[in-house]
Amino acid sequence: MRIHRLPALADNYIFLLDDGDGHAAVVDPADAEPVLRQLEELQTELVAIFNTHHHADHVGGNPKLLRHFPNAVVYGGAEDRGRIPGQQVFLQVGDSVWFGERVAEVLFVPGHTRAHIAYYFPPLGAEQVGDLFCGDTLFAGGCGRLFEGTPTQMVSSLSKLRALPDQTRVWCAHEYTFKNLQFALTVDADNLALQHRYAQVKAARQRSEATVPSWLGEEKQTTNAIL
Ligand code: ZN
Ligand code: FE
Image (cartoon, rainbow, N blue to C red; front, side, top):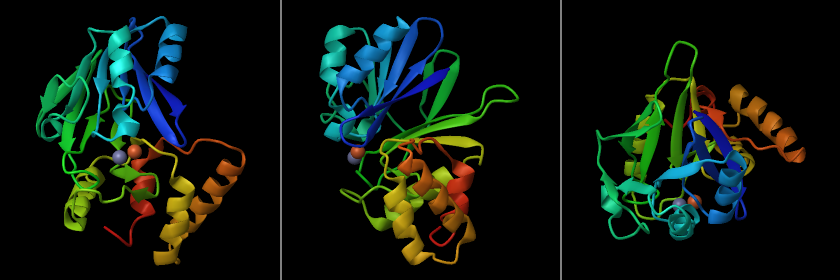
């Protein structure tokens, strides 16, 4: 499975998954256009839309993508029923979703919204790494704002993600890393791993480089003070 990171709107990332066999899936299409362009370039058919939650900057592209690919299946959390355009599959804890030869575990991670889910693809084969699509729950260097959930729910959701292996790529939905680390330093100034990461990310952003995906192991090291 090849993963393409597509910038969209002001600071969103859309992730296009390509199974190498003519099929693609997309995670949180903020906008249809960048997805349609990439599908055209790859000459692939869109078969699935995986949504993490109902916010417009995550589902905005659903209707137009469905007009181009009426057979694509739209997945989202069961609690999001009625809020995700075109949703056909209502996922619950313990459910799995298939894409190509990979299987993702569905994690229920409320906090940013009350219905937020994440998709975790465990490693397949000896040298592979895991892939986590966590929407606006865990960000590189921080977490999402609490719109519908409580701090306790968010901490519990982050703890679920923290239990995943260090060698997991964190595909979060926004480029918020620099601001997150700036804030993190105000509450955890003595954390050497955090200081080092801040300097790295500052330099990367000055070169206009993306900081997503990050490694879950690094997220654990740089959020010691909180969880
Ligand atoms: Zn959101
Ligand atoms: Fe968002």
